[in-house]
Length: 100
Image (cartoon, rainbow, N blue to C red; front, side):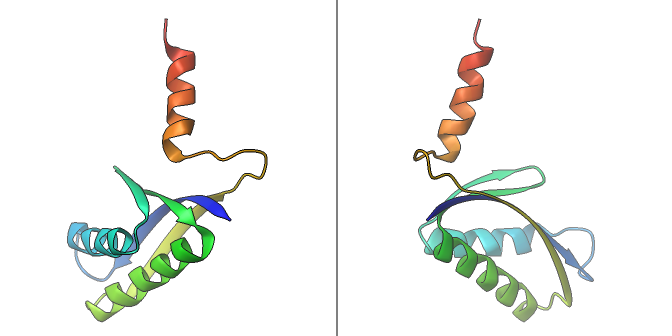
């Protein structure tokens, strides 16, 4: 089943800057062949359910191995059965409706 996830990973106990940890997660997502869209407060991830959640698990494992003592992740999950829809399809639909 194809899934679109909005993921926010929050490492605690590593100081104020967390960009190196987010970059490590993105490397995992890229290696898994997942489509991603980084935004200011998280990442959209698109792919097969098992692949996406395996990559999220690997992200947590990797960050703990990097010395992060505590992680909190917020996940929103969307699936459809009536049609195939990508992250970009959803954005394009809104943009088309906003066009003059």
